[in-house]
Every structure is written in structure tokens, then in C-alpha cells.
Image 1 (cartoon, rainbow, N blue to C red):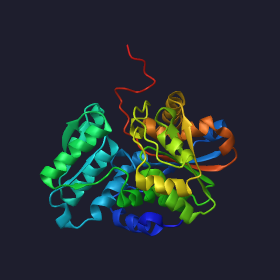
Image 2 (tube, one colour):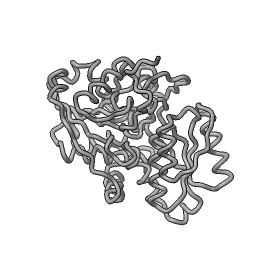
Image 3 (cartoon, rainbow, N blue to C red):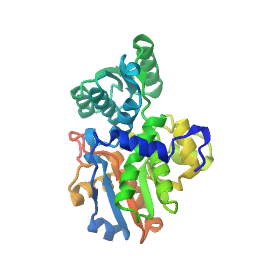
Image 4 (cartoon, rainbow, N blue to C red):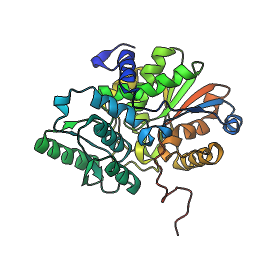
Length: 322
């Protein structure tokens, strides 16, 4: 790919992989004959739900922290996040001997709040909207001098996330397609760079909830379109694309497909029941996109990145509230 805007590239992903390899899990690749028969294709699942902190986000956060000198980290690191990036940065800071302070919306899941605290980070709560997140975070940075690490619109974070696909393709080099979820676009853009660099013929897809479909709209409009009131069970994908991630996605991603919440919940349940593994709603979105677009993937060898397993066990979507 052409490296416009000094975008991350495969070299930066390879360097990130070398940097973080001693600390991350090399997550397994699993298959399900039931799902292969149901969807008439061969699906390989890269299980980042087994990654440290339960999500791929640890790769990007750790690479971003380790890419900075110790002097830069003296005043700590900060970010705004509803969950997985919050946990990832908390652990990355802990491992690096610095302090993380996370700006979290008041409606973040209890399990993710407890996990962030367990990794040793401080939490400042804000209103559950992007403006409040950003303003609260900026006030803390002005006061503390902490280093801000964006959840996705950051070169080092994107390079770290791209190590997921690098590992995946090294293990399953014959994949014809690869599908990730898309929210802010860090995983998708890193995956696209790694996949197209390693296997130029591979087609890169993203799955996105219909109720938070800004990436799909932006992709087909050719310009960034923000979403104001995303409405989806997949809470990790309610964010809009960033300028850096969009610049990569618009160049080299093949397609973005949306799926309904109903299908996302069905896909999540299928993974739990048939594969006996825990995934959160956001991780089920790529499978949901395949379920709603079977003809595109029929008879193909398809890689799916299961992005995380931090499900709220007190609020599973198939359990009716009394």
C-alpha cells in the first residue's frame, strides 16, 4: 500500500510484534465443523478472547506504552474508554512501571470497571458521550501532564493491533478472506495492512452493527461520517472511525458489512454453545456479518478475529429480564 500521511505499515507491525511478544499470549486458532456446515464455508477463528485482559486491545496499548521512553512515561498515561482499551492500558502501564488513569463513562459495565481497578489504574467517571469523555480527559492531562494514548487513532496502537492478523496469517496462510469487527477501526486498519502485505490477494472485510453503522456509511461515501446516537448490543463498537484509521480503511479494505442486533445475539450464542468459549457481543459481529451475507463467503476459507471475551455475565443478551 502507499504510505500516505505517514501511516503505519507492515514494518511497524513487525517491530511491534517483536516488542510485545514477550508479554502477550499467542492466541489459538479454532474451528467448528457445525458452523462450517451451517454457513457453507471454512471458518478459522483467531481467539483474542484468550488474550491478556480478554481482548486484542492489549496488543495496541502495550505497543504504545513500550514505544515511549521512560522519561515520557514518568507522569503516567491516560485514555478514555468504556472497557477493553481501559483494561489494556491499565495492564500495559502496570507492566511498564507507570500509572494509568482511565476516563470511563458512568454506564460502563461493572465487570470492566472492576477489571480496570484490579490492574492498578485509577478511574475518573464522566457522562456517557464522546464530548464528555474528551473534555474530562483533557482536563486531567492539563492538570497531570499524563501521556494520552488514544484507543484507536494512534500509529503505535494500530501497529500493535495489526500483530493479531500477522500471527493469524502465519498460522493459516491459505485464508482467502479475513473479517474483523469495526468500531474505531484500530483492529480493522492494522489487520488490513498486515493481511494485504502478507497475502496481497486476500480480501479484507469488516462486520459492523447496523445500529452503529458509521464506518459502513463513511466507507461507501468516501468521507468520514460521525454517528451521534449509536444503538447496539455491541457496546465496544459504538465509537466512530478516526482520521488515521479511516485513511487506511478507505485505501485497502474491500468491504464493510452490517448486521442486526438480532443476528449478533444469535451469532454470540452460537459461539458459546457450539465452540464452548466466551465472547462478548462485539466479537460476534463478524460471524453475524457472515450469517447475513452467506453468498459472499460460500466455499471460501475465511478468517474471523474474535476480538474479546469480556461479556457482562449479569446481562447476557439472551436472558429475558424479569
